[in-house]
Amino acid sequence: MQKIHEVDADVFILDLEDSVAPDGKAEARDNVRHFLERWQHEHSQMSREMIVRVNGLDTPWCGEDMAAVVGLAADGILIPKINSATDVQRAQEMLNSAGAPPRLKLWCMIETPLAILNLHALAQQARASRMSVWVMGTNDLVKELRAVHTPERTPVLYALSAAVTAARAYGIAILDGVHNDIADVDGLRRTCEQALALGFDGKTLIHPSQVAPCNRVFSPDPQTVLQARRIVEAFERPENAGKGVLRVDGKMVELLHAEMARGTLAIAEAIAAREASRG
Image (tube, rainbow, N blue to C red; front, side, top):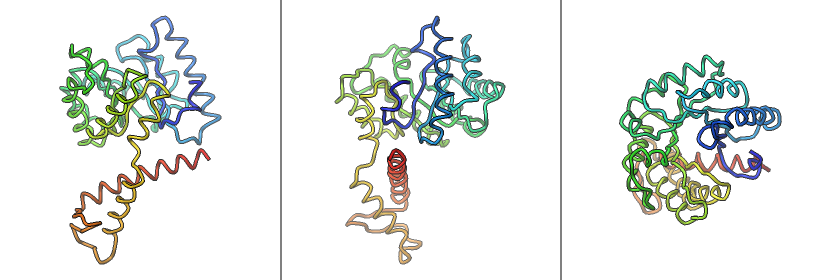
């Protein structure tokens, strides 16, 4: 928490689960609560999201975790080991009972074989709950599969791709899992590139040194932004109204390319706005 002001990340996840030993749960919860109280007063206008990963629904700490933070500056609550639509409903009910405001989002960890088998039913809950983001828990998934971590992440490629497909079908944002080897910068870059190619919106990280390499991969480069702008402008010209296919810079582009280009521009504009807000 002390390093947050130095880290150029979009979202910070304050963890009360795996990184905290059982006898330290209460102290960690108090630390997060005090931090969010200060953040609420000092940084309410900053374009950073604060997410709290609470302990699992069936643990003795989950209810207290939620009650401690739902009324503060948290933007969302991340629930680990979500397995089914019933789990999403339980989390929703617990948040409502704890007095969570309507703006508070529900994030879910997708990190078990059962969750992968239930992706469709899980994703459908986005229509009737706070759920808006999935986070892949690749470490737990590898463990539960009794698989092995490999540089290419072959054992979890099916799960990663299936989760992205379900998330896209129901308008859920989705983040890739962590890269464990902090010193392996090339490996981090490769997994970020793989995650981008698979369709992920971003990646979760475990050390400040990983933020810059990740940002470089997930931020559109100037040439990509320029090309996207040309495509959008071409379709917006009056003489091209109603056309489904155009020639831009010698290439044939369709309406679907225009939609993709608008997404690229939205990302570039969001990055520029955040940089401007930091002065």
